[in-house]
Amino acid sequence: MNFELMASMMCANFGNLEHEVRELERGGIDSFHIDIMDGRYVPNYAMSLNDMRYIRSATDKPLDVHLMVEHPNNTVELFIQSLQKGDTIYIHPEAEYHPSTTLQKIINAGLIPGIAINPGTSVETVYEMLRIVKKVLVMAVNPGNAGQMYMPYVGEKINKLLTLKDSMDFEIYWDGACGADKIKAFAPKGVRGFVLGTTLLFGKNKPYGETLQEIRELKF
Image (cartoon, rainbow, N blue to C red; front, top):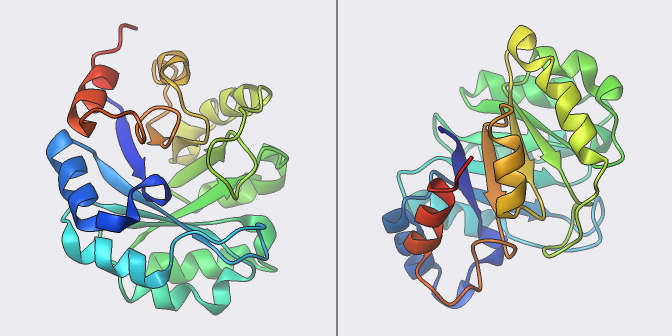
């Protein structure tokens, strides 16, 4: 079964970020997920613009940049300038007065436009934006911290998005509390990719390649 695995780099060892990037590459990760937080839209700070720039310079793999910031239209150009074709920028629609304007900047730059949907955000409130984005990042937990509990009603939201994705031309990605059970349940349904953090990938005291191989060999 073909699905993508993304490493949530906010969970990596920042004492040796180069080593983390190299080991994840060797292990077969598909892309690097970069969480940017401003302490306002979410009550936490995570990775910085410079962290993103370093990872962009250290790998040829795609970057998925998740902007958990207020009014991303004010700062999105800073991220656009440091990314390259094939990279993705996700914004949260609730964080912007006119999210389609920000998404158009991402499209104009030749990057992949995406939206991130919080557990409490309904599909109906973002329906029109589904026509212009290529990726929808479904948050299975409230954004802002690693290691949170899964919100069980998120599965119903994903099922609703699955009925729309082909006609509206977008792919669905899972972020938060992603264990093997979630991949086994939702990859066969059509969820394209999964962001891996502390639940499944980081802090397991074994090589990343071993963990990633186990995930790809899951029995469906």
